[in-house]
Structure formats: C-alpha cells, structure tokens
Amino acid sequence: MFDNLSSRLQKTLRDLKGEGRISENHVRDVMREIRTALLEADVNFKVVRDFVAQVREKALGEDVLKSLTPGQQVVKIVRDELVHLLGDNPADLNFSKAPPSSLMMIGLQGSGKTTTTGKLSAWLAKSGKRPLMVSVDVYRPAAIKQLEVIGSALEIPVFESSEKDPSARVSQALTHCRNTGYDVLVIDTAGRLHIDDELMKELEKIRQLADPSEILLVSDAMTGQDAVNSATEFNRRMELTGIVMTKMDGDARGGAALSIRSVTGTPIKFVGSGEKYDALEVFHPERLAGRILGMGDVLTLIEKAEEVSDEEQAEKMLKKIQRNEFNLEDFRDQLKQIRKLGPLDQILGMLPNMGPLKGLGDVNIDEKQFSHLEAIINSMTARERRNHKILNGSRRKRIARGSGRPVSEVNRLIKQYIQTRKMMQKFSKGTRGGKFPGLKW
Image 1 (spheres, helix red, strand yellow):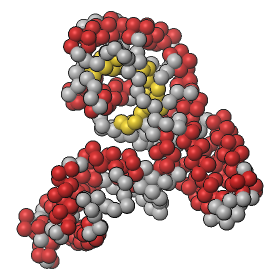
Image 2 (tube, rainbow, N blue to C red):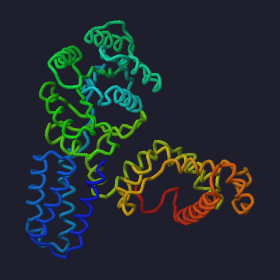
Image 3 (tube, helix red, strand yellow):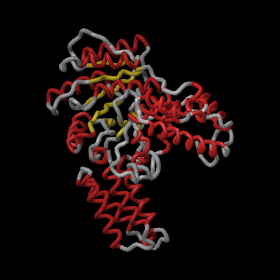
Image 4 (tube, helix red, strand yellow):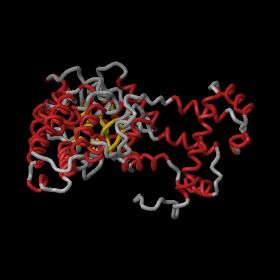
C-alpha cells in the first residue's frame, strides 16, 4: 500500500531539494504535484484541499523562501503536515478503572472483524492483560466457531454459551469475567453488508449493557472511500473511540488510511498488516509518514527484531562473528530470523531510501527464494556447512541435485555467504559490548 503515492511524493520532493533557491512558482508546481498524487491515491478531496492549503501557506513563509536550504524545509513541512493528518501521536487504548474492561469490535461484514478480535486479544495478552473473547454474531453461519478456532490457535479463551440473544451473551460473559478474573472482555459483534437500523439498534443495546471503554471500528483499507463513508456513519451513530485499519499490506492506493482520521475525528489505534495473528501494530502517525516519504521506519523494524530475537543467542552469534567462525549453518539461521520479521518488501520499506524498494522499480521479491536457499544449505553435509572452503565442483553438483536447484544458484549462495561473512566481520570489529557505535537502541 502507498507504493504509487510514495513514489510520486518522493520524486517531487527530491527534485525540490535539489534547488538552491526556491520561488513561489516552485512551491506552486510542487503543490500541484502533491495534490495530484493524493487524489490519485484516493484521498478524500476535502482532506487534500485542506492539506495542500496548509503546506502552501507554511512553505511560502518568509523564513523558508530566504533559507539556505528551502527545499529541505518544505520537505519537513510536508512531513509534519502528513503526521498531523494521520493523528500526530499514537492513541492509547482506554481501560475501565474497575475491571473487567469491555472492548466492542464493530464494522461491516467482511472487514476482518473476527480475525482482528483475535489479533487484538493476543496483543492484550502480550501486554500483560487477561483477555476473554466472546462472539455475539449469532446470524452469520459458523461465526462463533470461527472465533473459537482463532482462540484455540492463540490459546486465548472464548466464552461459550447456548444463548441466542446477543445482549444476553454479553451479560453472561461479563459475569464470567468478574467471577474468574479476566480483566478485558473483547466483544466480536455482528456485521452487515451495509449499515442499517437493525444493526445499529443491536449495537446500541450492547453498548448500554457493556459500557465499553473502547468502541473500535474495524475498517478495510482496501475499500477506499467506502471505508471513510461507513466510518463516518458508524461514528455518528456509535461515537467511536478508535479505528483499526485492516489489510494495510494490500495493494490499495491508501487513501482511506490518510482520510479516515481527518474526516471522522477518530484516531487510528491499530493497523493490521498481514494474515498472521501477530500482524497487528500500534499505529504511529510519524512512522507511517516516514515510510511514505522514504525516510524509513527503523524504530518499528527494531521492535520487530526484538520480538523474534533471542538476546543470549545474539551474543553467541556476535562472538562467532568476531572469531571469524560464522558458517553456513549460522547463515541459514539468520535467513530464518529475517523471515520471522515479515514479508521482505515490508521490511525493506522500513529502511531509509528503500521504500517502496527504491531503485528496484516493479521488481517482485519472491519469498520462495528463502526456501530455495535453505534447501541448498540443508543439502550440504554438516562438515560442508561448517567449512565452505571444501565445496569444490563435484560437491556443488551433488548439492544442486539434492536441493533440486541449478548449480548456478548453489554458486550464487556461496558467494552471498562469503560477502555477508566479510561484511559482518568488518562491522563486528567496531562493536562495543555487542552494540554498533553510533547507533541508539
């Protein structure tokens, strides 16, 4: 998502930064390009109008035009206004003073509400809470069973009841929470293909009964302006406290995510960026703005790495690198670690000047390559993995046959391994206490 918008904005601002002095004509041309890029990304036209007006007003300020680096200052203004458009600061979840807290998950059918209920519950459990899930979608076939399957996979309990009335199910679940010590009840409500009075009356009844600390709208980013329109109506009827944008890893233009907070006045609290149950992130406006403008999102990348890494194992790996003992088995283990971080195109998008895959054009990164590399290494003997220098021609042919890959790929992997080993050895010489100097962790 945002690939086209990101490319357009980065090119426009990169051209501007090359100007030693800028004039009102420069600013006008840049604003025209920004307006076009945002409209093509399906951003609400009123949001685009206000955004461009704010940037133009600040960019034409005397301090900017007379600055020695006016282009860079305009880039900063665009970045700051983009952060403001997205909500300035991360919005925390609200919890009741006296447990259990109730979180209502609402939205249209097909928005990913049930899956998001599981993802959010997993996030709560990781944050030290004791969540209980309950489905009140008694209309959609297998909706309750779907939540039970998700709960089983996540090892998070789902309240069971034979009651067919949604409000009664919520009442029973709340009582169960109070009696058993669960401090958060996550309520997966029913959806419709469109907003209607019957749906709203049911949601309002549940809200009165549960007195939720959060009413979270699960909104599908792939539906574009329809997501903004439905969010506006849900907010009018239910007074939303937050929005969860799903399918942010899709190929939609991204206009909904850039419009929805401004149009509804409701903060985006979480974003879903994948099908896995851990693919739910707290929404950071400044980080998304950085990704869109090619400035990267190193903080999120570090957080992802910390989640999947073992500190003790990292220390052992560092010592092996410093002793020049980094072998092909270690190389395979590092490839597995990278795969745990998520899709490679998303990881590259978090690196400065790499999003969206700067310089690679429309190159499609094939995740299967990781599997091929692992297959090649697994086809080696333990002795070969620990000493790449013995990999002569005949051994490489045998490895190629065993892995089902051509000899050229075996040669390429060994070359990549040797280059990686040299690079890691070079960097490790400058480490102090396991950290690279100059980096703030």
